[in-house]
Image (tube, rainbow, N blue to C red; front, side, top):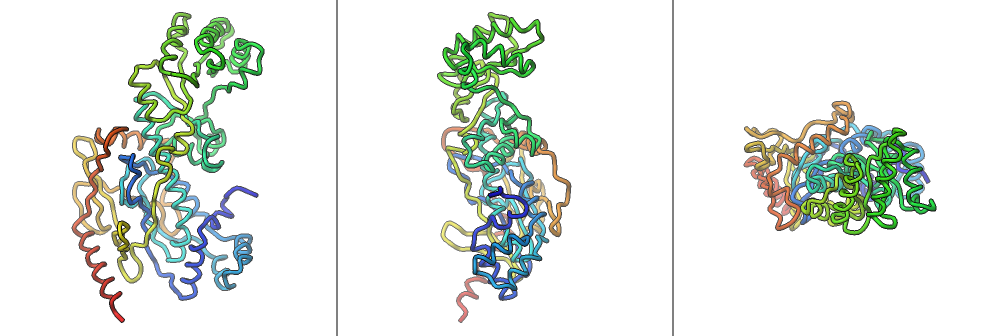
Length: 455
């Protein structure tokens, strides 16, 4: 069974997207429609979210087509008539997309993505867009919190072996890099996305040698410019002494021990002893790297204790966003050929029409956002949604991933201090609705109630 690829990606959808599309097709309902993709409310522990996944989403839309194999697979379900299947065989995405740039901070109810396309096209892409944008934004947001906790120290994505499947590991590495990770251990993600790759060694490598010091010598000679030695297999402090011994022995050969890694125990306390041993043996430039089920909370505690740790490896807690493992993004119809649309379900209302989000700053810090109608005049705010696709094609070439990472760095620096806190009661960021949007909502509700009451 092959992985998800450009050929089969249109089938990565919920069945009801196809049954709705078939019904639209049967009744000639394919006029342009606009859908908003947004998160109603961030997870309870999140004070902000970071946008990610857009580039992969646009790639999907540009390559969207049901090839012969996909059409045959749908035929075999026995649910769809031949006319609809023939229509799908010719279908391409021809719509326009507006989006918040990757790496930017966003908040509840703000459209992260806006799709305007013929109704069937806009409907069929819902599942894939939600999957891609929800997951990557979730992980980028987690990574941004880790970056805050690191307080300027580097951290590396170590999550591949604990993520929810191989594809998730790829996307997690990408989103983690946007959120602030300096590298990933995932080689395929490095190749696909141009992310720096980093790694050390496993305990199995050390154990496979009769003596720990022989493992260190061998690895250092094999990788003379980038050796990071794992020193906690037996006794961490003794491992540090042996690492220092090897560093001094092999220095005349041009070998440089880049660092040592702590992966167990009280790494903050152990790091103090390891630093002392390294320094006493002339290894002041050898860095200390820590890993072992770390997250932003443990890292913040380690940093607060003044531990001499230079960088962190973050795995399970990062790639699964373990404390908040899902992002409830939704994709809702907000306008069609009949005008603005609203949903009035309790606690799930939607705001009608094509919208723009404006961000207002005070003294270089984010102050509040305003959601307004697209054609409404707003002064003083920076618009966040930009047109990224027209008639099914990208407006601009894909931007380098490091550009999204730098945008995230700038966004984190601009957050009010209360939003950078990792603990304590969550104070929500202010997101206003414009007078025009409120009036449009009232009008749409009144129209809906009038037409719904008609016989």
